[in-house]
Image (cartoon, rainbow, N blue to C red; front, side, top):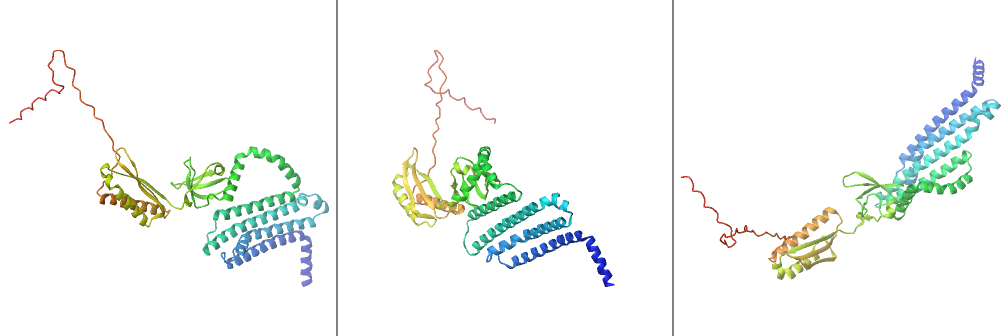
Length: 390
């Protein structure tokens, strides 16, 4: 009984051997890939991203590509089984025979590239989290630049390896690139300029993500949200994003509003000419107030009687606030101006504003007719009012 079953099973195996082996290879690859992914994800979850930044990033980024890599190898193994079980002519001259090895190599290279790109992203995020957890501030712009350069190196290397796997000559390609690079450069001048501008931003770091910049001579100003290879995305006061080509930063000056050390108070205060005797006391008390004010920098400030205007005396205020926050600046400026106004009032002086003169034309009498008596240039008398009824 058992021997007959074994004979039948052997006969079925010999008859369907190719199908059974291909099915076993594909099924084994599917199961092995899923199992490997589950194992890597569980190990990554046990690792803390802050403490094991590199290990967690590598395992978390490799889980899905590792599963895909096993599937690619399993499918390539199934194709190899088909070729080994086929007839000799089919195994030598078929499209599968000629394309199996290059396709397998390209699939492996693409999967490994995908794994490395995912791992770089996860490691970059983990390093930023670890820096914040330890109380350090890692520059996101520098981290983004290093990550992009690393990913660009991985992609370029993978492309060269795939071309070599497909039978292209790398030496010939590089030689052609030397001649064709000039033509491509002329055809894509703006693109190359933007790429160089992006590299300049990453290298010199005139601004970084989260800072507020102003480009003088234009209406472009806003907070930096993202620095790309071609353009930088800013967010304006109206919360609308706009994109600035990176080539502009190579030719235009940039004001980094966020990196200022203090804000400036610069005001002109006008008082009456009649209060000229109170000016020395007003200036002295205002300087004393500025020297004791906690919101004003004491290393430099100025309050002086600056000039005699056409209709008033001008007192000039020039100072810097300790805080760069806009709300704090407005509060300090308001408090300083109110205190100066109180000092002027305590000394019996009064503030004045701009004065305008209005010229009223003089009234002219109509020309006197010949022979009419002279009226002395006065207007004719008004008629008497009508008597009221009753």
